[in-house]
Each structure stands twice: as structure tokens, then as C-alpha cells.
Image (cartoon, rainbow, N blue to C red; front, side, top):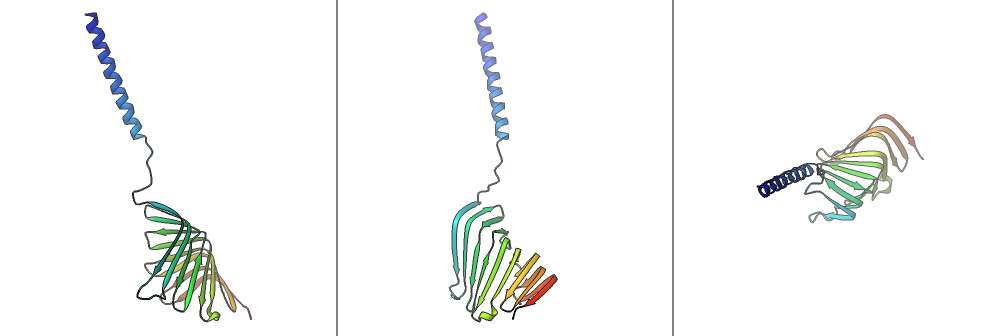
Length: 182
């Protein structure tokens, strides 16, 4: 009888240990860290890419970046350099950071410099700001911050910018000052 009790007691202790072990395992599984990385997220260093239109070989795009990563619906780019080349002009945009939201809103941040070089050098321009937003759906550039536009004979500054790239209409919103350089 004593042997039966010890066997049943050992069996009960074993079952209790198994239940405790399973409960602890389930609790540890529930406490595991939740990763914010999705299956389609990625990252890359020292990236360079070109886009050339076969039908219009004079239109080319070049993007160079120190570091790029995609997380959810955003792409984060460090030290982007974007070059857009058309038949008669070349546009180069540099900034410290770039965030792309849903592949339609591009936010260039930190020391944003846009240089536009034309065949006619008198038409060259340079734009400087700390934040430049490009909305691809309506083809507009905007900035709520101080903007400086330099050309051959003038320097114009203002707070806030709205530019329609389809019509080439640019408007500085407030505190506009222009200085002519002979």
C-alpha cells in the first residue's frame, strides 16, 4: 500500500510539474517582444540607382544614398542625392534625410539644397531650406520654413513656399525680401 501511495504521489507531483512548466512556457511566449519589422521591410547601405526612359533617353533619374530602410509604409533615406536630367536642364537635390510616405509624399529634411542648371547659365537657380516636401499626386513642392532662392542677379528669401511643377509657378508666402546683385 505504501508503494502505491508513493507511486500516486510521484505521479501527481510529475503532473503538477508538467502543468507548471506548460503555464510558464505559455507566459514566456506571450511576453516575447513584438517586432515592428514586417515581412516586406528592408534596409540597404551605399545605394545607387538609375532610371532611364527608353522612349525619352534625355530624361534620366539618379538616386544615391548612404543608407536606406523601409518600415511599414515609410522609406527612410540618409544623405540622399537626387539628380533629374532632362534635355535642357539638370536638377540636383541634396539633403541630410529623406522620408517617403506611401510612395507619394517626399519630405527632404536638413540642409536641403536644390541646384537647377540650364543650358542658358543665366537661368540657373539654387534653392536652400531646412524642409522641402514634394507631393507626387499633385506635382507640388512646399515648405513651411525659411526658403532662400539664388539666381544670377538676385537673392530672394521668404517664409513658406508653394510651387506647382506643372505650371512652373512659385510663390513665397510671407516675409519676402529680394536683393538684386548687379
